[in-house]
Length: 159
Image (cartoon, rainbow, N blue to C red; front, top):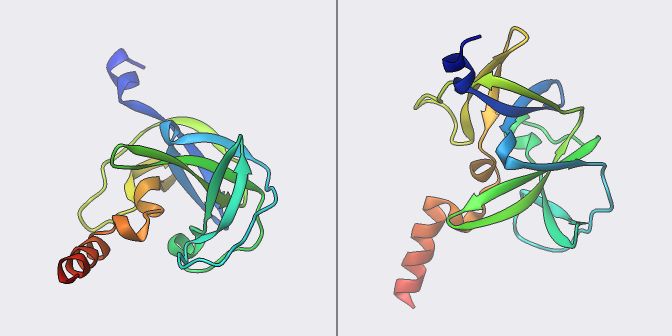
């Protein structure tokens, strides 16, 4: 492999969710942990199932299976602790996954305009084409979504 080809490769973490595999840039992954006690509380954010405590932090557990697979998955093997970015702020988020993770180097193809907002790109691995997920877009808070921000601005203007 030439030095130029090596520079194009990026580290990604492959994860399993149900029967499908997805990838996340390794720079967005903090750690992989066994499921721990999840604390549930009343809230209005449907994507957040609850929170876990990890290394002195309160980490929201975000259900991503329904968005990616079209159904919820109750079986969990691990939580992938990922970093999501909102402007200048970084936060941890726990993503429930159902299988092992693997660190690989792959060339990431840019997403097309027709791809969902949570798709950061595509990789080819073991004869499969795999979505690279944008954790920040996949776990966006309502106030970070354009429609919500416009509505909130409108409400503030009317006050």
